[in-house]
Image (cartoon, rainbow, N blue to C red; front, side, top):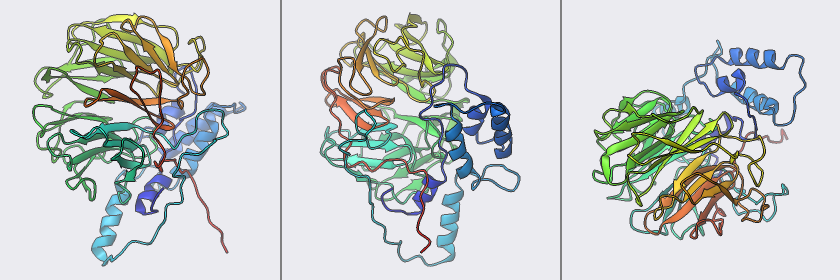
Length: 470
C-alpha cells in the first residue's frame, strides 16, 4: 500500500480475521484463538481440524478465512509454534539501521487503488477500504484525520476532497485511535493495531511532534497493546486516557509514559461532557466509571443486561445521559440509557435485530463482534445513531428504531457501504462522520443524506502478492 517500505511487511504478515462472517451463536473456539496472541499456532490448527472433521465448509463459515490466516501465520511463529512479538519488525529494522549506514530507501510508487472505483461489481456502493478511527483539527473543520486497520494515518485539509498519508514508514500500519492535541495540532498520537479484526498487531501508542512527518514509539508502561480508543482531557492537554486490549491506561505527560488504571479488554472510553473527572469505559457488558480523572474505576453496571461487546455514547445536550450499546454474540443485544451519569440503567430496547442486513431487522444475521458503534445528536439527547451492517436511528432514546442507511441502497434510504465501525461528531460544525468497510461518509442532516469522501484513501487491505520468476 503506497510506498512498499518495511511497513508493508507488517501488512503482508498481519492477521486476517473474520471480517465477512455472519454467525449468531457463540464463535467457535478456533475463531477466538486466532485473535489470541497467546494461543499456540499448532493448537489453533488442531482445534480447527477437529471442528471441521466430517463437515463440508459452507459459505461465510470462516473456513477460507482461516486458511488465509494459517498461511500467513506460519511465517510469524517460532520453532514451537508460539507467535513472535508484535514489535519484531520494528526491532529488526532498528538493528539493521544501527549496523549499517542507510542512506536512502528503495524507490517505490503507489499503484493503488487510489481513486474511488466507478463500480465494484458487488452490488453495493464502491469503497476504498475500512476506516477504524476519525479525528479532527481543533480549530479548522476542513482538516480531518482517519485511521485504517492496515493503511495507516491519513489527513485531509479540504474536507475530504483529497488525502495524504502520514505513516508509510512505520513498522505497523494499523491505526484504531487518534488524538490531535487540542493546544498544538502538530502533536499527534495514534493507537496502533486493529481493534475490530486483528488484521494488524498493536504496538501501543506512536507520537509525532511535527504534524506526522516523523514518528516515535510512545508506549513506555503500556507495551505492545492494541489501542481501541484514546481521549484527551479537555481541561488538561497532557492527560490522555487509552482503552486497550490489556486494560485502561492513563498518561499525564502527553503519552510519554503510561500507567494502568483498570485491567481487562476495553475498546471504548469517554469523558463526561461537563466534568472530565468522570470517565466512562466498558469491557463486554461491564460498565466502569471513574470519578478521579481516570486514576481508578468502579463497576457501575446496575440494570445493564448481558452482552458480548459494548460501546458507549454521551452528549452535550444532557451531560448526565449515557448510552450503552451491547451485542449478543453477533446480533443486536440491547440499547440502555442512564440519566444519572452511569449510576443506574434502563433497557430501552432489545429488538428488532438492527445488526442484520434486512430493512426491518427481521433477520438473524449480524457481525456484532466486528462492526458496531453508537452516537448521540449533540443537540438532542433522544436522537440516537446505531451502526452494525447498516445505520439505524431512534428519535425516542433507543426505544424504537428506523433504518437510516442501507448497504446497497435498498429500503428507500441512502446507500452507504456496509459495516459501521466508528461514528465521530466534529464539535466545530456538529457534522457526524461514519467510518465503515468502504471508507468515510458524513451527514449534516441526521442521516437524510450520506456523501462519501473516500477517494484518494489508498487503504485497501492487501493479503498476498506474487511476482514473476522471469
